[in-house]
Image (cartoon, rainbow, N blue to C red; front, side, top):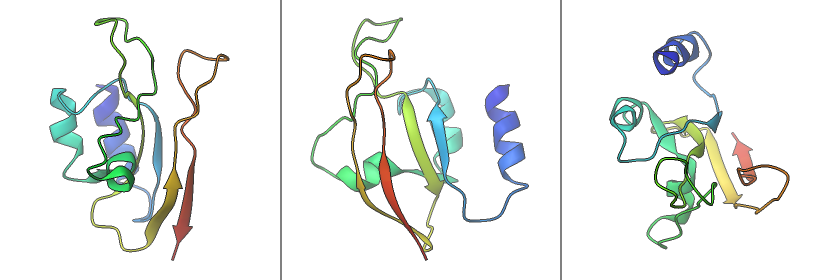
Length: 106
């Protein structure tokens, strides 16, 4: 429900938006297929086929396995937003790791 509210609200904003946060979903989750036609996963775009999973949580509560549930998204096919670099910084201040990115807006 919240996911659909977010999607509706984002549609009221301009075309060049960066959406970031704790989405509590992974690419195998059903909501991913609803979101991915409209937004590109920045981490996947930056790392390509390197195999770096970008885990932002060491242990997911349901599986006790590491996971990537924190994301940054840009509109799919955007030619105005570029990313120079991105990383995951491990922290002990939260149960999620920091996800900084360096963007170029044209």
